[in-house]
Image (cartoon, rainbow, N blue to C red; front, side, top):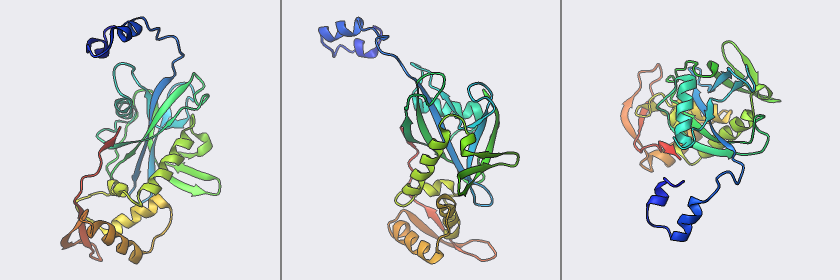
Length: 263
């Protein structure tokens, strides 16, 4: 405490300086802080997918979970911890992180009181490449499906239900998807999932909306809303050319900068 920038700043009174120099940091119990990352993308079949890791250590050894881990106190911010843990456990880096929510309910971690700051990362279609590392046995991309019992997560080798996930990670995932479904009504979050934000057809964006909302959308109504909310507003421009698909479609480009990070 004596070596802190705050104490050295000279902008505090003598009384406050004395208080801080004599303050007992062990007066209150300290919860640990972790970062968890809900990493979402779409696969080649335009299905919403999530990145999960299989835990290599206790608690919940062998259970699937979100990438994440403890923040190194006095060395990094929780956002930096999220980026570091995501890379160490999965090899994924250079993604946009948006802070989702802080989960602080006592008992959510059997070891001690752990406060988790959760983030959402949206990765463009076809660009999510993963490898397991650090304390993760495995790292895989799972397709998200819905049934009467809630969500299931299916990879080429595993089927995971919400109740199979470690900690309260099912709750975190549900909140991330709910927030994303709400935000795409007024924010361009869905554009993050496009394979190419600088050259895309309306139909490409439509299927991403459908994968997020888990429902089919009327193309005419979607086109009308797209032109009104993005093209007419100057957020997207027409490239005045068509795709080379079997049924050519007009191509568009996102002109505004997407918000890279929310801390």
